[in-house]
Image 1 (tube, rainbow, N blue to C red):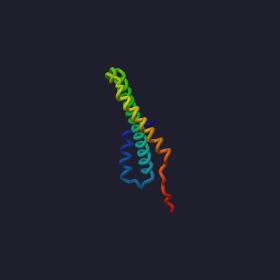
Image 2 (tube, rainbow, N blue to C red):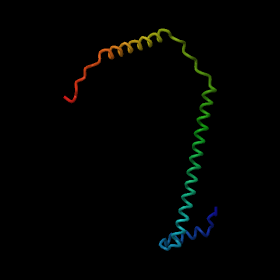
Image 3 (cartoon, rainbow, N blue to C red):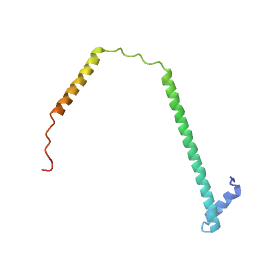
Length: 110
């Protein structure tokens, strides 16, 4: 790809002073196109760098989480477990009662 020589910048400045001239319009169009391509390449590069940095930080967090010893586990409490099972049994019984005796809903069209 050709680099923009210093003369091209002078040509663009001259073209911006009189943009109605077709020769000047071409210089402005070429400069604008090159600027947009460079901007897009920078944007893609920045996005890739940001994604890679986030990926590395996530990997580091996972490795740190894996490296730390697990917290002391709470011993099994049989009473709390029985209370949870009883609560689920009550909910199951409540559901069976609702299924067996459905509520009568009035027809809204009448």
